[in-house]
Length: 581
Image (cartoon, rainbow, N blue to C red; front, side, top):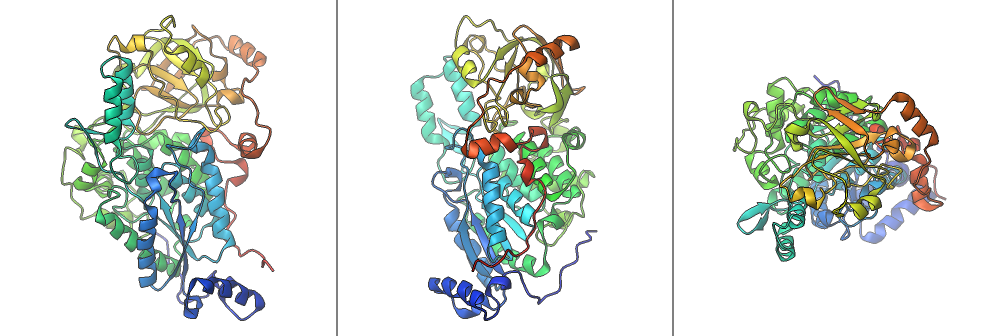
């Protein structure tokens, strides 16, 4: 059983360092708060709960979070707490350039400093879009006050010409169909109108849904949170219940470090394999673990996920979308199936105060074509494959459930693109010397290289290959790809090209061997030639001179370690800062 023991209650809470007493500073803090119409007795020592909101109209996935925050407030008031909502920087995946990933760490810094510097005893993390979930978990972990996640939920299924279309996944498919001449530009524009027909995040098992699932699998959200559609009334109920629960968590002093143990991360990795979750979850969980001092590595991802069947039949790996997943029973059904097969640490404590098993023991699967039995899994070896070799000494990742079986062992001639601009300039050129047996190699798109490590690793295939009816090729890069994407795509190659990793010196015509079953990625070039090329290598990536880009470039660590900033690893605690006057 979990070793967590609730703290004694009542006791003096952190917020009383601001609000308790009759000193000049106490009165200073309380009196300005009262200009919002707050009665005096709200500062009597009850839990003060922050509602950390990533609402933004520039983050469409999170644009409905104001309403959910009001529901959270209702629950906090009912449970005897004082809710105080505040905004933090919101990195929106669909609008922010060069990539929202570049600003995940900035958001995490914002969260951390807001939590430490203000009179909060606990916090509800309002998230949805891809980077907001890990960023808020990272920031909250570094402070380690009681925290709980409530996500905005996925949007409704897209509907177009009698079929369901999924966020991202259908966009990539339709884009390739237009390049291949299968649909017209007018068709493409017509489909656009049908893709995003309600508030919410991606309705595929993309990064947003994957990270919502990771929050639940880590024990940081109430059971069932991950899959409820954004516009379903039960999403509001979940927000309301979350508000109630955080007050008791403060009384018990149940903190992120109590919940997100090594066992919890192992649970999350296995769940990610079962749901066909995003490769982005690898980077984000490594970063969160780094804030908590939990020893989590790429080897853990491979060890724990290698033999996990992918049983959630959702795009991009499968057929359905998040609505069907919720109606089938959602993530609790997946967790129960894994637990019954001995793949889950049943006694891991969750923010509910119950163990992981206690939460799911009685749930049922209402559609076994959406959540499949193990014997009918999409793939028996799901999870995330971590390949290593002289091309990726620190590792690279691939998602087997979204890859083509016939390409999992492949040897091909490299066709090299030095950066994303080089790729865009060449890929539609009919004279490009490339066929379906080649391996496409994209450089300088990692954390330092892009900068920020954009989701460009799932490079579109050249039109002349698409016209043959070919839909997949092996692609290798130091970039990421959207969780909604698919294909035999090797990502996060570490060290990255911009940091002088071996990827930087791959040349056109080099032979590369990918052997996923044996976890090998090999550049078939003699060692002395590799050493000679590396000695002569010079970066083509401009070093930012100033601003946040300069900070990012100077301090971001490799994707294999979570791409956090070197100076943010670990926690800095919740000690009350000095008075402001």
